[in-house]
Amino acid sequence: MAITNKQFYDKLKTATVGIAGLGGLGSNAAIALARTGIGKLILVDFDCVEKSNLNRQQYLLSQVGKLKTEALKQNIIEINPQVEIEIINCKLNEENIPGIFENADIIAECFDKADAKAMITNVFLNELADKGKKLVAASGMAGTGKADEIKTLMKNNNFAVVGDGKSGIETETILTASRVGIVALFQANQIIRWIIGEE
Amino acid sequence: MNITLNGKEKEIAENTSVENLVNELKLKDTPIVAEISGKIIKPENYSSAILEEGNIVELIRFVGGG
Image 1: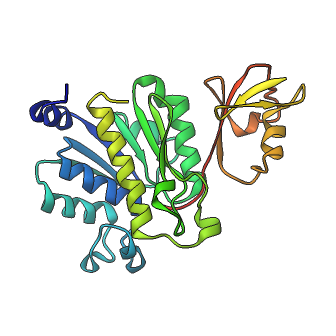
Image 2 (image 1 turned 180 degrees about the vertical axis):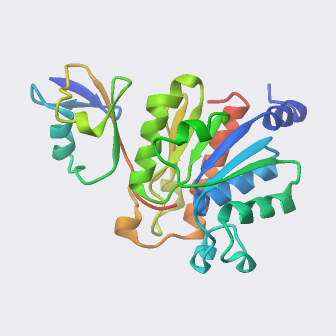
């Protein structure tokens, strides 16, 4: 039987999701989760909004120069003021990740650099997976390939990787709002599925 | 001997290390996460982690963009 509206929104309301990186992936995923009615978001980034971000990230020209955490919080409040938002301005690393996401049920890996993606995945699988948390990472979204090549690969029941698995900025150079956005929304979709108890 | 690599059967030589496998797959300079039968192998242990018959190996490759 399909989940009822009330069951769906009740589950969403009690969930806390950590967003690691607020670029093209993180800003899009966070806004989708906010629109859906997520209870709490922990938004983490150290960077400021730059003009060059506006081609795919959910910020405005008037927000250039602002911290991404502050700007995204402002945008989410304009969309859904009921979302509880915690913002943390720092660079995530092996040492601080477990503490910062201590209260997150699910973490979205939304970095842009490949080595940072591998780093947080290692920390998650070593230290957080056995605490019942879940991670959805992203790899392979650069270039102009077919949207249909993007998949959600379930590595196990608490770890998924979204992307085409191959198209990196190292070789493709271009990042589009469409392809990065698709991956971000796939991430948000997997998060929502986990929250309501689906695989 | 045989291992399962990312869900597919693969034949490898005896005494193959994670490092050997990574090199064979030309993933030496690519950020990856290596898992052998559910256990994460840290990069500094790739050369000492020797694969055994029936191991379930996941090599998760990360490329940039976000």
